Image 1: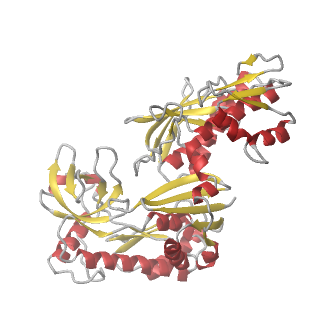
Image 2: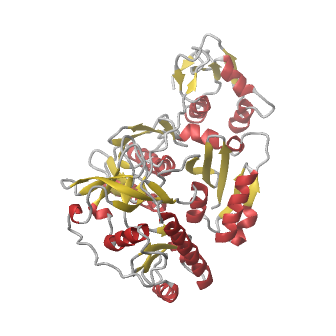
Image 3: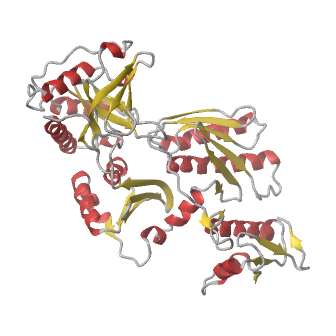
Length: 516
């Protein structure tokens, strides 16, 4: 299993694609204006306290006030608030918390009106970017994420990732942090810290303490609303969270960005510096790595499955709805139940990838093909649960209901990635839109495979619009020639200018239309 990162720098921003064995796994956009990104720390001003919601609305400079709930204040809110006010008034001149006297933790069942009032300055961190008509979601339990650890000011706890199962290793990491952690700082030890030397962890800690000092310097004499510390850019944060021994290449199409990423990789993983490569090809970098085609396929309403089935994905304000269809997949000698479980398992694998790729959040209802066997339903649930273990977003799922519907909730941190996959139709001069043509060509090939392999048609001819005829015949190694090598049959392709561009017909040896 190998991972590649492809970074496409454009005038409008940076697109980052994470590939696993050539398959698109994640897609991120880093816009020129990175305000209100997850992890950014702001000095805000409380605009209004709403006791009925036990929350406050905070002005952080966004067009909509940000939302801060009492439970997101964090137990050490009074200590943070005292530190913030003392810094603003010149009483806290150093970022070091060695001599800082901590306040008592707030009551976990308290009221927000007891600790906050309108026009109060408050230090907050973005935990959810603005979504739809809502402003950012905030908390006041400030954390600074590093490669191996997450620094938590005003806390004395050392927490360890539950994915580290080895008790001896957990004790070793806890002892390391106890020996190097500054006073009044807590820490969360990340999974990637497993097996790391004290020098590596210490360097990561020093880097995070340095960022805390930078935030403190920026906070001095600040007036709200102001961003006092920005999170790493999306490319660097992705490298921080995912870079491991399985990474084989990082391709970047801009020299300046390559240098920035090289400097960052040199800090966090010097042994990986040689995997960074500059892309100098003639074609667009996403085109060269086949990413554009995968985007067209995976971001549309209809997502095809390798066997010929497909997913239909509908996005609404309240939830995402997914329907699983077997399409033209033939059951051959299998029963309907065997065919259903085969399609459902394949759909589960693709769904797990699409949810992560599109960053789908909130409620997701999936209508799988009905199965009568309890064992098959349990198998589907376990498969989906295993697939979602790789997803970093918090999630939960309910086993299939008697109607075959699986309900999933997935943490919504950023707006769902929505990419337009329709194209302007040359037939109607741009007055209508069609399904992505690359995806349509694959659909034709899927039907052709069904006719030749499953229905055993001896001779098939394909009638299409001249645009598609040219696409299938172009080049020495054309799609038609590839079909010949695959099926050992020569497919006659007939251009018909009377046909709409997104239409096609198959004819048999008797020149009769074949219904697929």
